[in-house]
Length: 358
Ligand SMILES: *[C@@H]1O[C@H](CO)[C@@H](O)[C@H](O)[C@H]1NC(C)=O
Ligand SMILES: *[C@@H]1O[C@H](CO)[C@@H](O)[C@H](O)[C@H]1NC(C)=O
Ligand SMILES: *[C@@H]1O[C@H](CO)[C@@H](O)[C@H](O)[C@H]1NC(C)=O
Ligand SMILES: *[C@@H]1O[C@H](CO)[C@@H](O)[C@H](O)[C@H]1NC(C)=O
Ligand SMILES: *[C@@H]1O[C@H](CO)[C@@H](O)[C@H](O)[C@H]1NC(C)=O
Ligand SMILES: *[C@@H]1O[C@H](CO)[C@@H](O)[C@H](O)[C@H]1NC(C)=O
Image (cartoon, rainbow, N blue to C red; front, top):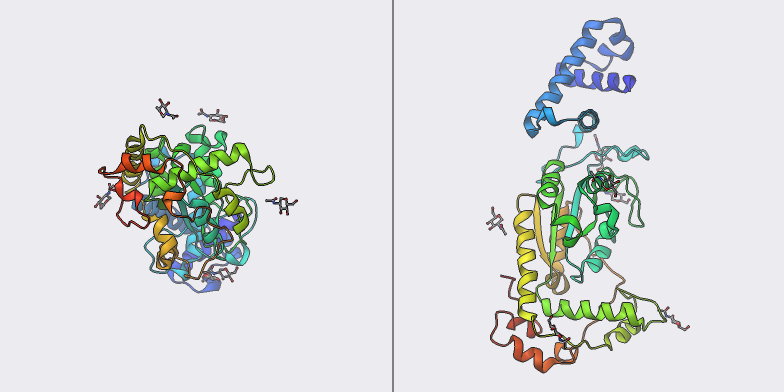
C-alpha cells in the first residue's frame, strides 16, 4: 500500500508541479521528507476537491468508503490520458478478485436494465451480450436473499460494478459496459429512493425496458405459467427457446384470459412503469420499448450509443414464441374483444399499434 501510494504520489507531483520524471523518484522522496509532505498535501487536497465536487458528506463516510475513494481516485489520475467527452460516468474499477492488467485504464460504464417479467428482457440481454465489450449478468436478484434488504442489495451492486461478479456473461478484463437486468418487483421499486441514490452516486445508467402491448404480455405470462406446469418440451420448462420447432410447440397453447379485471390490470401495470420512470428520472436514463427493438434496428443502435460502445449488428439465438395473429393466440378472443372495445386499451387488440404508453 505504501509503495503504491508513493508511486501515485510521484505521478501526482509530476502532474501538479510539472517536474520531470526523475526529479522525485521513490528514493529521492525518501531522502527529502519535505517533498513527501508536499505529496501528502497534494493528495489530500485532490481528495477534498473530489469530495467537494461530488457533494459527499464527509461525516457519513466510513473508513472502508474513504479507502475505496482513494483507490478510485488513484486509478482515475493515472488513467487521465484517456479523458473522452462522454455524457456518462466512467468507472475505473479495481476488482478485488483479479487484475485488469492492460485494461486497467479502459473506462467502464455501469448500467442496469429495469424491466418487468415477459417484456423481452431475456432476448434483449442476449443481444447485448453478443457485443464483445458488454457484460450483462442476467437476472441477479431473482434469488431472494440478494434483495432481502438494502445491505444485501448494495453489496451485490458493489460486486457487479467493481467487476467482481462472475457469470457466463463475464467478458475479459476489457469489459467497457457492465450491468444486469433487474425486475421492478425484485426490490428495485421497494427501495427506489436508495437505489436511485446509489445509481446517481456511482454513475450507473438506467435502461428502462418496457412493453407497449400489455395484452401480448399477458399471453406470454399465461403461456409461461402453463409451460412451467405442463412442460410440453420433453418435460423441461423453457422460458425461452432456440428453435422454431420448440417455439411452434409452445405456441400451440392458447390461454383463456380472465376478463373480469383486465382493464384494471393493464392500468396497474402502466402505473407501475410510470412510477419507475418517475423514480429513476434523476439518473442517466434511457427508455426503450420492446416493440421498437423488434421492428426497428436503429433502436438497438441507440441503446449501444447510450452505453457508449461501438454500435454493431447484434444477434440472439432466441426464437420468438408467439408469431400468429393475436386473435389466434387467445381462446376467448371474442370476450376479450368486447371487454376492451371502447377502453383506452383498445389499441392492444390491433397487431401493430404504435401508441406509446400513457
Ligand atoms: C486508454 O484506453 C485504452 C482502451 O480503451 C487503453 O488500451 C489505453 O492503455 C488507455 N490509455 C491511457 C493513457 O490510459
Ligand atoms: C472490445 O473488446 C475487444 C475484444 O475483447 C477488444 O479488443 C477491444 O479493445 C474492446 N474495446 C474497447 C473499447 O474496450
Ligand atoms: C440483511 O439480510 C441478510 C441476509 O438475509 C442478513 O444476514 C442481514 O443480517 C440483514 N441485514 C439487515 C440490516 O437486516
Ligand atoms: C426432446 O427429445 C427428442 C427425442 O429424444 C430430441 O430430439 C429433442 O431434441 C428433445 N428436445 C428438447 C427440447 O430437449
Ligand atoms: C376471474 O377473476 C375473478 C376475480 O379475480 C374471479 O372471481 C373469477 O372466478 C375468475 N374467473 C375465472 C373464469 O377464472
Ligand atoms: C422526467 O424528467 C423530464 C425532464 O426533467 C420530464 O420532462 C419528465 O416529465 C419526467 N418524467 C417523469 C415520468 O417523471
